[in-house]
Structures are given as structure tokens and as C-alpha cells.
Amino acid sequence: MSSTLRVTNVSDTTGGTSTNLMSGLAKAWSNLNGTGTIAERDSFNISGYVDNGTGEYTFTISNDMSDANYQPSISGGRDDTRNGHVVPYITPTLAGSLRCSGAIPTTANAHDMEFNYIAIHGDLA
Image 1 (spheres, rainbow, N blue to C red):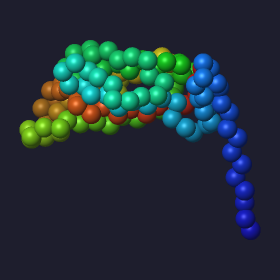
Image 2 (cartoon, helix red, strand yellow):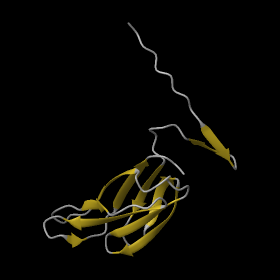
Image 3 (cartoon, rainbow, N blue to C red):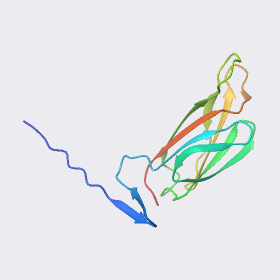
Image 4 (spheres, rainbow, N blue to C red):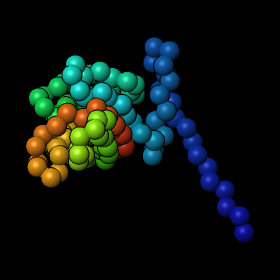
């Protein structure tokens, strides 16, 4: 017996940009260099970044999520020759932003992350 999965794509085209609103797709993502002067490598639905201090960053979501109950994922690290690694942490979320930080687990000291990767799944507002 075979089954057929039907997927309906819904797109919102604004200003020449088409955004796929299908359930299950990442609604926002970012690749950020968090060392020195922070710099975006690439992103989708992220309008800005704030460097809140050593190892702490806020990502501003362009088109807000419907509420703060979305599912954020984050990974990251540093690229250097020092021992240890940096573990990323997510702090409470808001519909329009996500704050994360990085720390060295053996010392709990905050540390800038050269590689910050976030993905956000949930419903757009």
C-alpha cells in the first residue's frame, strides 16, 4: 500500500522577495562572526545584531514570530589553538529577538564565539 504526502507551499511575495511560509521550514537563520567587530556572514529574516559584551549577542528577527514559544537552535565555537571549547547558551526569547551567549565550560568564563549559527522554527506573526 502506498501513501501520498501532499505539501502545499504558501509564499508571501513582498518587494520582489518570496518567502516560503510552509510549516516546518526555518523561519530565520544566521551565520555570525562574533569576534572583534561582529559581522554577518549570511542570514535569512534577521535584520540586525547587537554585541552585548564578551560572548553575548542579540539577533533581531525581521518578521517577528507569532509569540516567544518558537523553537530556537544554536551552535557555535571558536577557531583557535587554545585548549577547550565554547558552549553556546540561549537566554529567554522574545517574539522579535533571540539572545545567546557563549562560555568555556571548564571555567564558565564568557567567551566570544567566532562561529555563531542559529535557526528558528515556529510560526511567523
